[in-house]
Image (tube, rainbow, N blue to C red; front, side, top):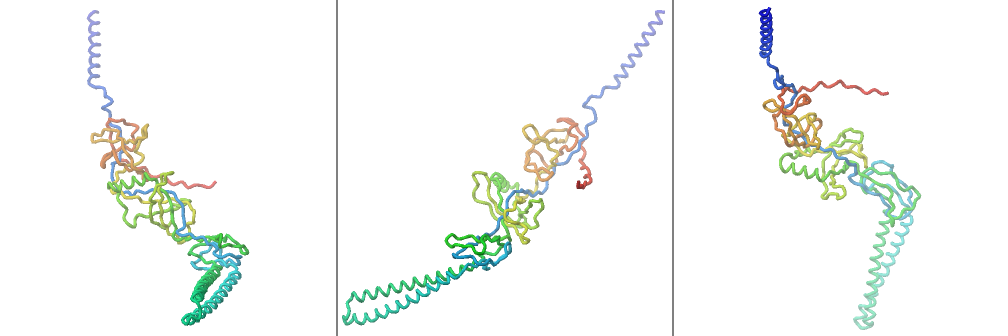
Length: 392
């Protein structure tokens, strides 16, 4: 009986030993030995990018003239169609000329009288000159005659100037356009008394082709752009490429490209902005004075800009930008970068990345810094079919 029990115990021990040894033959798989997580990556590259900025501003006329009265009188006629295009020198208004015609006639009569007086004084002086030779008159009498001649001569010159003034005033009764352009509504109606002394405003003419687009840019942006051009990170735009494109209030792009004329020489101390002006063709007269728009301007070109998709960037607590980089050992490391600007869905990186490095696009939630991953090229998903808006 005792021998049977011993045999049974020995068999159990042998069986347990076999199970233990078989378990030892199959070691546990540690976490680090599992298959690497698969992540989608893109390779950092370079491309030629035109850096643009959009700045708000308003449309202004290239020339603007106020039509004002230069003669005093009653307005008789308006000789133009309000809101129409007028030509330089075109007659716009007519002021009652009768009072000024009378003033001109009076000035002409005064000059005729002065001419007669001048002729008489000249003849008297000639006679006195002969009499003075034989001492028939005194030297004082001769001097008085000579002075009278000078006074009459001065009076004649004054009367001639009065005639010229009267002729000018009479001509001002025909109010003409000082420039070519589009005229506003009449600010004075027929029958109103206008004054040359107060220079009564009658209308406004604005030249609308081309037009000016006046806008502002911060002095900090201007300095940044100049430094980038100086250090070579940004190249100047070739002549003919540095156009100004307007984005209108309704979001549409204006069909004609303008050009930048100049930037102001001073910074507004209250806003820190610098004034800029562009000239825009306006043959269809679509752009109106005071209209709001945005100017899209090419600041410069970067021939080898380091670019990555915007979706690869994560933001830290302090707002710092980071990306996950897969190094040569397929290990993930977190990298802090500096962003120059965003162009659409692409980000231009100024520091932190080099061309050829791989960064994680998808799968970042499955990995942590230092872990080994299996990088696969990122394939963008097919764009979803466009859903047309339906009116309710």
